[in-house]
Length: 604
View (tube, helix red, strand yellow):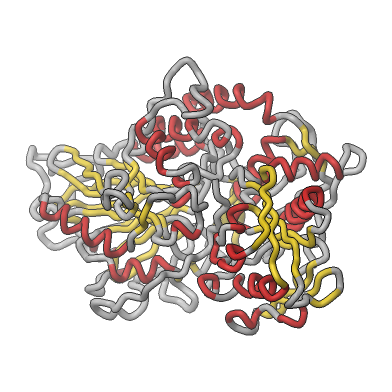
């Protein structure tokens, strides 16, 4: 599996807009009244109360994205959302957990006979132990129980390769680990859509490109794509034999195909996203005020997808927004994302026009809702979690270390990033005493280490399950040689090339220091003269032995220079490395304190 970053991936081409549109559309454009001839039926009903079928039918679209196998409520900041209050202040709310997500979705569907549930990819991959240990079969079972109707693939669906993705879709026991119970894994009840993921041999999509939801005389087509840049954020083995095509061209192609089949209402499920101006899930990004709106790859994509598509469900960036972005004709179109880890779901009303077979776009309304934990737990989800936890417990409950306080993963340089880099440096020195430093990609750090006990282990105890949640990819920790000039170039690649717009700051081991000047642009943001190892300037001609995971060693996340290292040595998996370090450097009476995160000097 690969460790990926959920930061913005710069698009490879810029489209010429079919028509110009000034800024984001206002909320008022979406709230415009239906045509004078419209007589919308009450939600979930198709008549006017006099035995006649109404021209308009409201369809409820429930959606979420980037669940990443978080069946249990995620901990720390991963289990909270920010809510904007009426007075302009914000508060945080604990959120997430499929026991609560199931209850919220089921309550939302009540009274809505015309309801469809869709997802925007990364349902699995980078999952906590309860799912990841079993190759995400538990998450697929949970999604079946959630009555998910359809999802696009995301980049993480390829962590274990296309054959494993096909198994999640079609069922069957794992080829090496076999079956986990006396019942054969039946696979997903819902279709995974992969319109822009083609087999290099056949040139055809590896899974269905689209799917049509039908209820009586209402039908809506769904087209699913992942980001074109998936090969840059997944291990080479995971995307072997596959081609990833442009999102816009693919969606426009299949929108025409759906129209030829008489399907005129279309929703695109896109595993690519944006960055709203506020972290509050209920922020009005169509307010028109200064700093409003959404930026990032999804804007360019949305402005170029054919107007035949009525709404976009997005993901990948783990942000929350319910915005409008003008389509190529300049008309507003809804674009949504529901954060990540099951903390939110989006409720969108699509008003279907029976006369035209299309969505009345001016009546589309959408909002994100918190998956609060103050509702009753869904009993079937509780039973599912209990079943898999029982199987995982002998492994997951084992203590592997002790900490004195929360060790967080947030920030340009994070305490947890420092800890993991130090662990990999220590392991690298075991393999080769000449190892000089270690580098860790931030997207491979999936959760914080929290001081408070998650179960019966006691405060400050780090269990194997908690370590697995931090590093679930089974990457190997490798060694390779880089010249000093290459090492400097690697650090500059954090803020240039494909990472220029959204930097990916590597987490670094003790002894490596430098200044990051964010007042500058591009590669100049890394101050070359400030880069030192153990107080000495980097010698461009010298050779440095560097530890890193195999994802980075393959040039992942835009670090092409790391793919040019020499004298490689493949080590054990990264979780074992973290476990060894925690066990060797902590005890119940002498726990590890959070590192200071002072190796990178940031100038802003």
